[in-house]
Figure 1 (tube, rainbow, N blue to C red):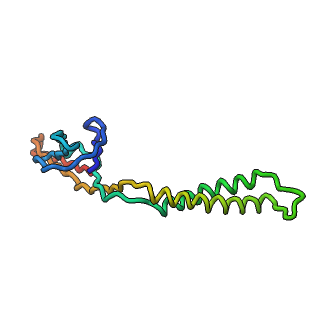
Figure 2: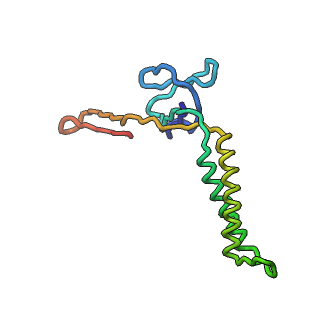
Length: 150
């Protein structure tokens, strides 16, 4: 579990394992020892759970291709056209060729990095809405107060 505390408690992020709850509090074991943190449910702003560790090769391919293609196109537009050769390219053609070349190269590098590098994916745990109702005496009888926290 990955937690973020609400504004009532000092803002902190930590990773731990849920232990059995104690009434209106959440108990989180931090690390392999006996270190635990007891948090009132009202102080928890967001709660996330790990859904596993995985690689992202396709995301790396896309990012590498976009970055490499953009850099190649920009480089091709900035370079002066070559003159006096057998084949002469204008700036647009240079941008297209360098963008394709560096985009392909960047996509390959991104694919490899995305496949090797692993990251942990987290999903938010939905929390039920908290409803509080209070009844107190008033001049003309009883007053009812309500509060809903999402």
